[in-house]
Amino acid sequence: MRLRGGVSLVVLYLTWAALHDITLDNAQTFPLEYSFLVLSGVWFVSVALRLLGQGHRLEAVVSLLAVAVGLAACWNLPHHGAPASWMNQLAWFSVLWFFVLTLRLLLFPPRAGAPSRPIQAGEAGH
Image 1 (spheres, rainbow, N blue to C red):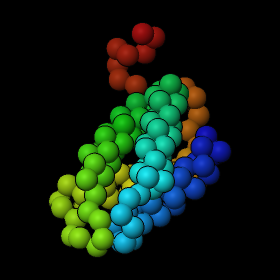
Image 2 (cartoon, rainbow, N blue to C red):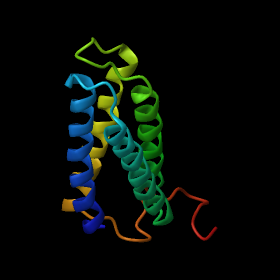
Image 3 (spheres, helix red, strand yellow):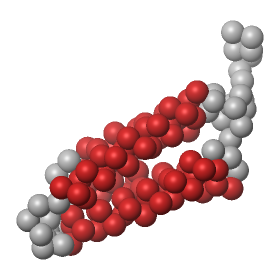
């Protein structure tokens, strides 16, 4: 998972750069930037599914929620320095979550079979 953390750090930087270009550049279209935002969403969904497969349900669910919020927030980003709506501001939730998750993957990589929450009585062995 450290490799996924390293790749995630690069993806986060490029995501920030794409958001920066879309909101502050004077270009008329941003196909490369929007393509990269889609690819970063796909990357973080793959990270979430890997976490889910390793039994880290809480982190996986929050990651999938963050991708959904990021998708909704970036659906109609303002261009040319126009003010962002409250919905656009929600994209920062996704960026913040994935920054924290990336640090966790780099510094404390999860192990397969080590759940992100304690197993409750009655769940063991099922």
